[in-house]
Length: 359
Figure 1: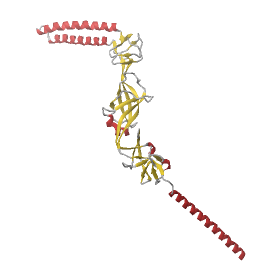
Figure 2: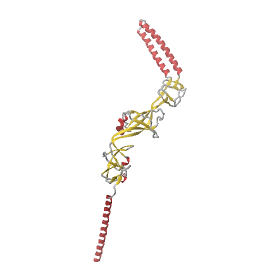
Figure 3: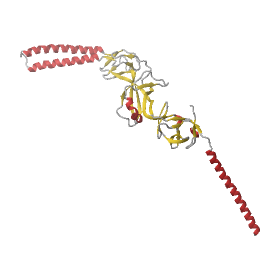
């Protein structure tokens, strides 16, 4: 029995010794790691100095080219289309003759109306002299006056109808595809052909509500520089001018519609084409812009690291708009703060850093 107890005591002592040695090893390891962390060399970083200033930027929006004017030419009288005086797709000037509609018929009606008017005028002149001498009654005189007025009105209507037998272009523009051929009989108020003005042109676009609040006053200024940007990213050489701003925001899209007028004498732009419109030289006053590489996206949002006394401290920022100089941000940043712009992946909160020169 004593022998077994002695063996148990010896085994217990050995176990304690092993456990003690093992515990001592772990403490030494953790101590070494802590010591190594404290002895880590500072991370070399470059910084950007924060400064509040007015930011100048350009805004680009999707747009569509619309005609400055577009009309549907209609027939004002019925009859046979006798002649077509244009070539489809050609340019016509305001007042150019497009169609002739059955002129002989309306000329005959005009001749009849003119004859009736002359007779009524002669009768009226005679009646007036007779009435002045009391040779006819008031009622008889009124009859001649009424006949004269009716004849004059009918003559004017006949003149208008004959005038409408020549259909003329109401605006300058490109004439479209004809709807009827020569020899067709058409009714009054029938659509004949369209004319689209291609110079100048309108460019319509919409801006989000956030931009309405920030830039609307600048959009209204006559000096605002507006350019068309085509599919090849080429800007128009001529500035446009904003000539319409919608009176209210479209609640379905939460956007505001605008329109700019552009010269298109070179015919570079086609109505119906989708382009972009660039608003140049807009300003955001008293703002902070930091290089895009200074921003680190985390699960809790965007941060930048600010260096103070050789230590990197994270600062949360709200991202606004990207400019050619960097990202406009807002947050707890002050003028003179040094924001880290490189080695961001190596930096941790409270990391020791050292500033280095160069770009």
